[in-house]
Image (cartoon, rainbow over the protein chains, first blue to last red):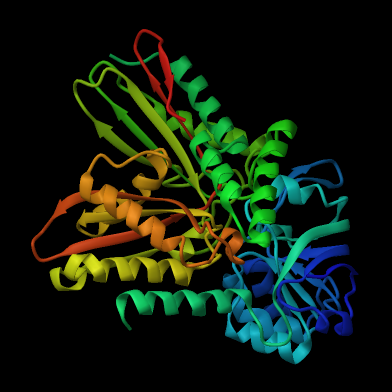
Length: 195
Length: 294
């Protein structure tokens, strides 16, 4: 099991070297995006409008924070991963635009596996329900876009010196921890109860 | 007779605050037990992080989880313990907790998806009232249940034949539902199963089972109790583990609540509760005595 610190923007080569089970940390600026931010990214791309951030080498965090509003900025209170499968329809789109890492919980599906292999991207499992712990890794909220979507759904830019540990749960070689576990579990059920 | 309303509002505020900052002690105990017997290295690390997170939340007075989930409040009362303005008490407490940064504003219109900004909205929190004339206390339990966990939920109207011999059809469907949910409902989760009535009854019982019972309790019903144990053992043999990346403890508990149903049907609802058991409950007596449930 290797342990690495990777800097954002992430490089295709270092991402392709990662294998399921590796533990990584990220440093740099991470973007949060959930259902609504992904929907808006799609609308912008379809309309040919420029996104507020570059997705080249980006790490997207499926998450919405608790924040405290100050005069001209926001303080992060806590943040943790949301269930990633909801963002499955957008994998091809964001990987094509250069996203190299998706952080979330619970994993993603076949479409994401294909996009990860084609463009070079990984899925990183964060500790679920550990919002105080994860927020400790964030130095500051650098910026926020699309706040009109509501606090959870806005795109928050989180500056971090060392974010993790994160477990590589889906890699760019067609391997997924979730899929492997599911396959074995279904075999156990089939043995016990029949097909 | 109605309970003192100022005291009631104070108690409700305390329940809401407590359930943002901590998880119920039964859940914490089960997490610690899970860590002590875990053999998978990744799962050990995940469970340690979860326990560390709970400690940090208390030290720093911060919410355990970024998502408040969705709140349901269980109220039961008798003739001498009428709850009075309890709906307003909870609605106000939720908005106050949101303003205080204890809770993310996460409540939206179901179709327009517009966020109310303060966790208010029609039907929030959801209330379940239970009136027992002779009950000499008011019981209030608030339960914030995470909503990623909802994505794994399942409901089916079983029939006699679908339940199967020795309930094999039912058991198979339950473990398959667990496998399909995998890491999505923040394992190690608790599985609530509601059986009986019609669709609505089974669904409500499934939520009540995970929200109002201590996760380390024993079901007083012999059949449901033995099913809970058998299913828990089977679920934990699947290898899904904490966070869904492999391990020995996938579920902390299975809780079954039943009601009688019609001879043609057996409605079954399967309901996941993420490991952060953000809930708090109390019993209040007319003489001012209090009992903390969790």
